[in-house]
Length: 275
Image 1 (cartoon, rainbow, N blue to C red):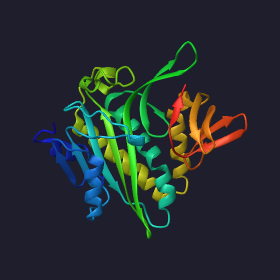
Image 2 (cartoon, rainbow, N blue to C red):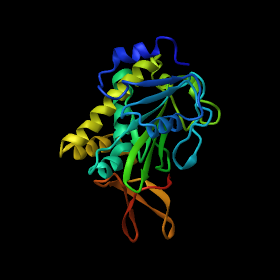
Image 3 (cartoon, one colour):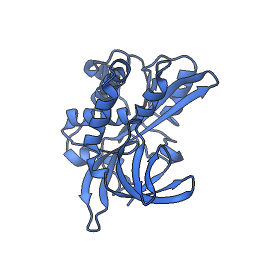
Image 4 (cartoon, helix red, strand yellow):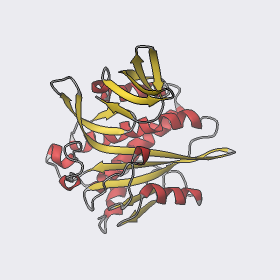
């Protein structure tokens, strides 16, 4: 659970100017994404953070449950308010930006080199098995949920769950998951990790908003951490049913490019199963 000086330690390590200026700390909650969305609907500013010691109903993409044991991980959500007129591009790259931010923060704090798996996972790569399939263990999941209406995009809630302690490795997730402590043997302060994640996330978002070259730079850095996932056999469900192919790269909007016998397809969303 977040202890009594958690917020003081976050403030000590945080250099962001918006993200983490307001933090709502909860011992336990149903979902930090739901909590942050309610706060955003009530007018909370960009950068508001909801962090919890555990979640009873944490979730990932496609409604999957995200295991959130007490004291085992860092579970938080933050409000992003994309700029009017350029929100679509920013939103399409937001999950990738969050992945890069978390990977950079984890590496800076612990020394652990993380890989990225499209679209929303931070993983530790284990190489390939004898059949050539990519082996990896999940360290972090990211869930970005946008709220729109007839007058456009209102806000995006970015939820991040990072396995910090060995206790995060429950019987239900081993061996597909790992934690920072399991990989490095280091005892990481969740408050400092949160501060670093928020700082890196703000840097990525501000760059996307101010620099014409920032999107290309972000994509290149994302690709640099995702090399092990390219050239891999995948299966996914497209408009015409189940499809098979081999991953090539991501495009300029962050969609996954897959080579098939019928040409290259760009997968924007949905479940992709890696073989």
